[in-house]
Length: 153
Image (cartoon, rainbow, N blue to C red; front, side, top):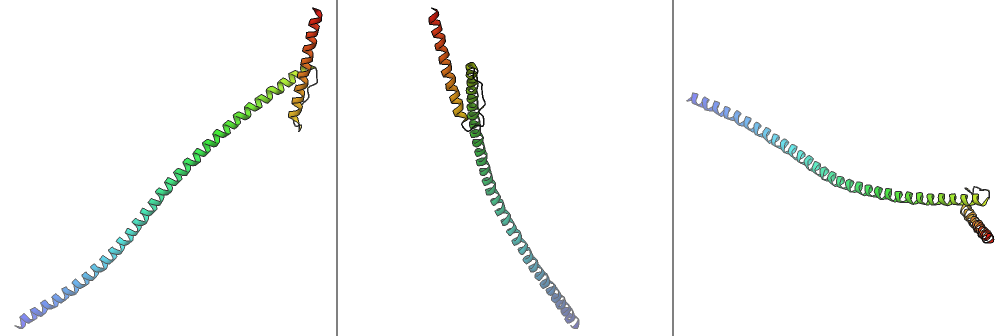
């Protein structure tokens, strides 16, 4: 009987050791579960943060694309306006050059010494006056020719 008691006591001691080991394992498992839960929560927060960053990036990307397209359109419009203005200026310059050449031809035909008026404050007025003088001279020359022609007849 003593042997049985000792065996039972031994079995109880072993059961107690096993129970303590199980408690320790359960405690370690609880700690591991808590650690895993904490890690999962952290990772979930990181994922949420990344998702919000990605969503913000997508919004920023759309905004940047919209802004880029608006700037691109504005630049194209500005280039077109500048081209039209340049064409107008070139046309005006060409007209002025033709007028100047005509004035010089008229002045040369009238025998008047051509003079340059560039840089003069009343450049336009001087050119117009010269043109008027040349036209008057030409009219007078035509009249003289016509008169001479009539006299010859």
